[in-house]
Amino acid sequence: MDLQAIKTNRLYIKVADQLTKLIESGAIKPGERFPAERELAEKLGVSRPTIREAMIAMELSGIIEIRTGSGIYVSKQKPLLEARDKGVGPFEIMEIRYIIESEACALAATRITDEQIEKLKETLIAMEEEEKLPDASEKADWKFHLLIAEAAQNSAIYSVVNWLWELRNQSELSTAFFEKIRQEGVHPSINDHRKIVEALEKRNPEKARMAMKVHIENATAAAASYFGKDL
Image (cartoon, rainbow, N blue to C red):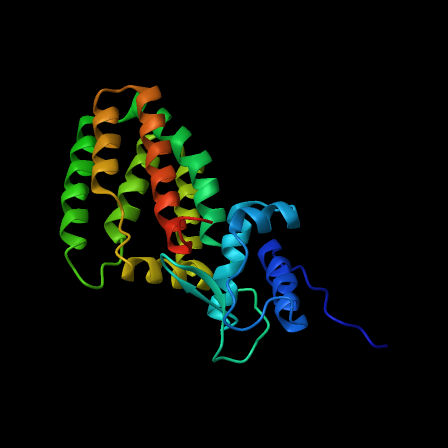
């Protein structure tokens, strides 16, 4: 009996496969610039984050070159390889963090203790110090978000938030991408984190929710800037 393994490719891999076929067919030639992210998303019927993650996978496979400030180009030098599944993409993770962590932050505002506020302030200082290091690992950033999840006093929320950060660090696609954007000078915003602490200290759920939303929106926009402004 001849059986083949069932594949359940992520959506970004399916998109990467289609775009790679365009290159192989000669529709987009080596050295040529890719169409804009918005245009690709509309034609393929997928979200812009999915297009970005397909591009990351293709860059890691040597199919394309992403030139910050210029755009995305078909590679001239490296042979075309199939884009492989490298884990959950960074933009998918940020999207679910936006949903989960903003509500966790609102809940934390009603339950956080003075001691936990002080721990958050100490972690802010640790983040500032960590960002001075050339090989900053963002461990303080992870701790900051876990402290907020802990302050929500809901073990399920804590487990989910921690798992999302673990997922980010376990995904080859995410870790490779975040390493690239750090090299481009994209770092966690200390000011955004400070505003979250201020909202929590006021025990204001709506301000805390909004502060977290703005923080993750800003982080997503900063990460997306890697692909160029006109995309």
